[in-house]
Length: 181
Ligand code: URA
Ligand code: SF4
Image (spheres, helix red, strand yellow):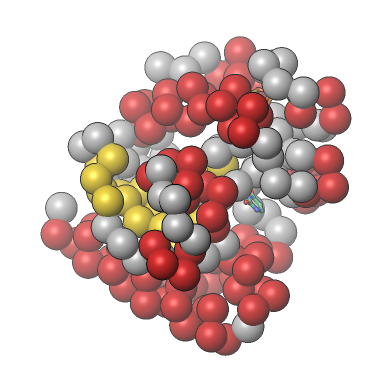
């Protein structure tokens, strides 16, 4: 079991200096689905919960429409728990420093399916070397869980309906996985 008090006061990387809150994650302790983004943004850094801004609204709208799941039914977190200044991409060092926390959460929650959002999470979790256009919707094994990646909802907010359509199709793959297991 990860030690939540330790995580909330973690100083294993430089992001601890500029963050307001460590965004641990939220959801049932044994959710079937674990959703993993990149890192907290400004809203999350202030509110202490993942995906509470515009990206999250789109994400949970699509999840509801395509899979029939609510935010409350999923465990939601990020590969990096503290906000990078200006929302820059986390460095390799930061990803490495935070990785044990994420691995601990996978062990604790023991989800059946893991959904990675965006390239940073997808590469970090599944070790993909290609970009999202090539790897989205590809089903992987992650220990006892199955996993897949899709675009980050922020990319869909920028990229418009064509990206949203791809996300919808990937979510249907996810729904099938949840149904099979
Ligand atoms: N983007 C992310 O990757 N994670 C969040 O929690 C919010 C926005
Ligand atoms: Fe610790 Fe992760 Fe925050 Fe870095 S990002 S200080 S490793 S919790």
